[in-house]
Amino acid sequence: MTPPGATPPTTRDRVVDAAVRMTVELGWSRVTMVRLADEVGVSRQTVYNEMGSKAGLAEAIIARELDRFLGVVTLAFDEHADDLVGAIRAATRAVLELAQDNPLLHAVVSATHGADTELLPLLTTQAESLLSAAQAVVTERVAPYDVGLEPEHLAAAIDMVVRVVLSHVMQPSDPPARTADRIAWLAGRVLRVG
Image 1 (tube, helix red, strand yellow):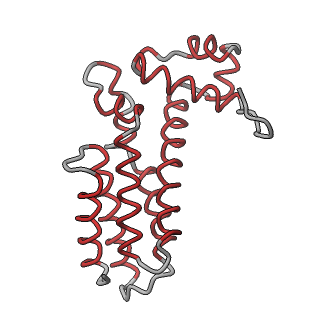
Image 2 (tube, helix red, strand yellow):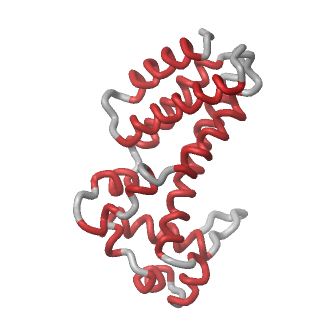
Image 3 (cartoon, rainbow, N blue to C red):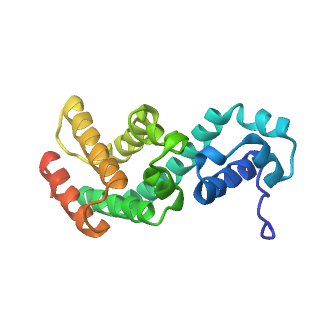
């Protein structure tokens, strides 16, 4: 039910929501356009019109999750406008906490058999667009800070931070706060601030 005054979700949003629920509950291999149509209460053709294909559906799911993650990065930088290392620490912690409590991410990463691993490459080996989007947001957010690095070196530093954070999203080794402190320390040294 849509709250009063809120815009009702689009058919595309409803299809993606249903696909996320099914992936978490049943696994990606059991998500079909027919099941989605039944779940959402539309025709199978409507699902195809909205998503194009199952690959298109997978990309839409990943894009929406990426937007959620990049939203917390943006918020962290907004809250630490005068402290780059603090912004990196807060953004990293927020991303790792969101990942820690994300049932879809857990379903994708923990899938260990058959077709259920189909979504994993979109987060790992085929993650160019994910990396590019994350790097673009971080680059935009770092631009106002005076770090004194040549553009090529700054791009390399941002790439390093993004890849390390994504690595911890996929395979955490410590609680989010501890990992965020370590990544912020490393970023501070590379960016020569803090």
